[in-house]
Amino acid sequence: MEGIELTSLHWVYLIFIFLIIGVMVMRRDTSLVCIVGIFILGLVATGSLYRSVMGIFNSFIYAITELLGTILIISVITGMSRVMLETGINEVMVRPFTKLIRSPSLAYWVIGILMMVISWFFWPSPAVALMGAVLLPVALRVKLPALGAAMAMNLFGHGIALSGDFIIQGAPKLTADGAGIPVSDVISASIPLVIIMGAVTTIAAFWYLRRDMKKGTLTMETKPAETGDAIKASEEDPNTMRTLSGTAKKVFAVLIPVLYAADLAAMFLFRLQGGDATALIGGTSLFILILIAMFAHQSSGLEKITSCFIDGLKFGFQIFGPVIPIAAFFYLGDAAFPHIFGEVLPAGSNGLVNDLGIALANTVPLNNTVGAVTSTVVGSITGLDGSGFSGISLAGSVAKLFSTAIGGGTATLTALGQVAAIWVGGGTLIPWSVIPAAAICGVSPFDLVRRNMKPVIIGLAVTTIAAIFLI
Image (cartoon, rainbow, N blue to C red; front, top):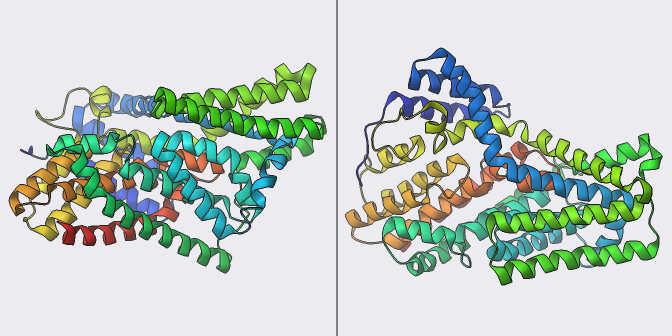
């Protein structure tokens, strides 16, 4: 695998990555740093002031376009949740679960494990919508903060389930192709790594969560934004609250899980994955919103449907507002750069992020320890674009390079790079990739990333050490 010579563009991009990480660690907003970074990258790439200014706006458009599907599903789920709250259906729905989930600890683990299982079959994004609609109210009822529920969904779904991807096998297929080995080898090698990474990370996250709850630094004051908005709206205008009969509430409380169960069956039967699965959940949620609004509000139902949908869109864009600048910057590290500033990257470039990963792999000494550490670092770097999948082929190529030099361990190194890339970029440490869980739970994606940071780093360190002995 041949690298290319790093240019000033690569170094500017790398400097701003560290600046953004530093600002996030200091718990400050990153929007200004990201905008300045985009502008300077444009200046260096084009030498044109007006094109650099245009690049800021165009990069925002690119980011919004890429994120629009997620924004819409969050908006629809939020609108549906609001009308369920106003009519009292959610109260009836959560009663059976309150008998099973009686403590914050049990809520964390039950939500997490269910999220993992569903995500294995249908990937995390549609699973988040299902879990949020049914189990989030239960978690809040037993005093698990919304941030804790978001962590459980995020770590078990976008972390454990997606990094292994044992059922759908999209991730191991990409890394296996990059390394030139069978998919089955990557899956077999990834099993112990996924177990170690998942166990260490989720246990560490739970320990930090319980510690902060006992200290009082994490409280129930953090709750889904749509819940608070709906209560506030009802207080301002009592006519917005419509009470259904007990029988009607029970019918809807049964119908809603049945419809989602039908979605799960359809996903399995018709092999719907990723965006298709999310679209099915979104369409079903919109159908539920319409049905409840018309039944509860009758003559004003048409206006209520529009009102709930608008409220959902407001919430979706409010949540994504701080995320768009940072997404715009990191998308420039991958496929967005030519779209925004033209074909100005060096010949043979695989994108700024991948070029940096290849350069790292080509400059470090080769042995088991360095090979494992570098695979983790390269996987993490390629995950910085927030997709987790765009760079895992590179993780496979790097693994092949190192295994050839040290005489073995291709599958283990490939699996390690895959685990690192997806845990970082697939969605636990990049703000816009945690958006589904954060938005459904009504918490800040930046707060969720900060809560995930220590557990995920600890997990990556322990998993890398384990991989050294498995090579």
